[in-house]
Amino acid sequence: MSEETVVWGELRAGGFLHGVRDAHREATLAVFGGLSRAAGFTERSYGVTAFDVFATWIDRVFEDDHRVVRDDLNGSPGWRYGKYRVLLKRHEFGAVRKIRWDRDSPTKQAVARQEYVEDRQLALDLGIGGDTPGDVTLVLAHSASDEPLEMELFLGRPRWNADGGTAWHWVRELDDALGGDPRRKLVERTMPLWDDEADVPLRLRGETSTGTA
Image (tube, rainbow, N blue to C red; front, side, top):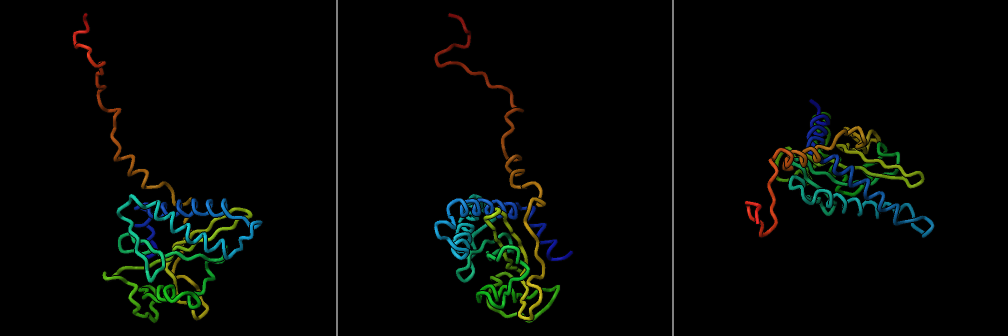
């Protein structure tokens, strides 16, 4: 089974993918609802704000989920679920497959140079793997447009593409094809089933059990 299939299956089953998709939607609506081009906000200011607000919303979505913990890398916001760390990357809308990792930050360059067993390449030991062998750092690439309002959100394994080749070993979009949110099913299973319990008789304070005066 490919790494893409395994990773996607685990993060989807745990509700992580649904959670970050919800956070992206809320963050995007907050940004475009609060900023306007008429007020002087540019594409750059939208981008910086969207990145920060998205990170805040991810923290909010998972604040009560102890399976997801904050795990930044060299100051870059990140979250860990099991052996997977996920970092954020804002891309130009419609150009997620044109990202040039060799022109990105040193941290993103290191992530793109991780060894990938399905396509081995030169890997640098830059300390991104954590203390546990087998840990993987992935990237959550996000973007949005305001006129019309559209959103893009992708999860993937970056590929070092100084050769001008593809930017990803694999990448997949987080959209409505995710299906039902397993986090909601978990809540439903843990809620008490009051309908299955016998009704409890209630009496006013001071009322006797005989009901006679």
